[in-house]
Length: 337
Image (spheres, rainbow, N blue to C red):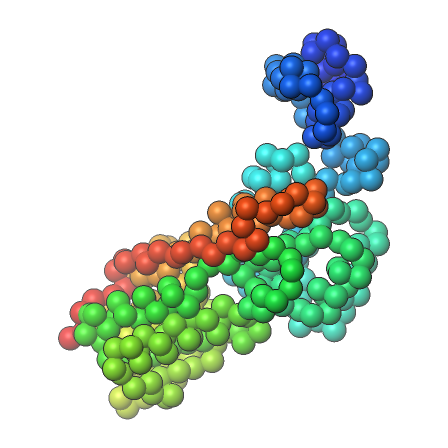
């Protein structure tokens, strides 16, 4: 069956092609009765708009570009799914561009994207969303953008974020409630704002519960399995080792389970382990990992809504949205023996 065209919609709705175009592009001053007829025809014919064709006529591409630099594949997949569903709902296409935030050619590569492809706006994930040069480039080119989980929030671009510090605070308190007082912590990549928020939540919980932070129990990871493994060995080879370890993401937490198994340390009887993100690996490994779940899909969905409002110069209900996280208690934690 041939795809329906805009002319087919006009014929079924008994209006002109121009009226159909005005309705589909949300132009003002179209009578409600005509809008209803057009939308009914669109639904009946299962008409799909061509974003590129619309762009040629209206100086819009109806394309949103998502830039990311993140080693966590589970996080990226959730992000893409959430952003894509909202783009489809609003008639936009989504482009995905992975970037290396450490590359000296980062700005040049993004500038190339703006020159050789067309987009109405960008979504910047962390840590790209805190890159001053990148933000300056998009401002200079007058390209709208929205950010996910920025650490620096002074810019006037809309953003969404999760309450990392509070979630980390609650997870650390949970470990303390199990009787753990010797709690190790593996930090994430220092370029990510979430790293500092999660560590701050851990610090605050120890202080709040009257415990002293032991610097020997804090190790610098990079959000990767390999660095989690290295940090776990450092922590577990100490003479007075922790009875619980909080890893800043689930991949590093999974690495702790590997090292513990090699060292014949029973989890959770001898060592409790918690992670962050509720990545697929947290349920694919045994024991399954107690973790923090971020509403990543919902965050991405919301940031697309905000960006499209910015593109259309529409007012915001909320300039910024902060999402709560959820503690997911599984099998890697137990009372301190």
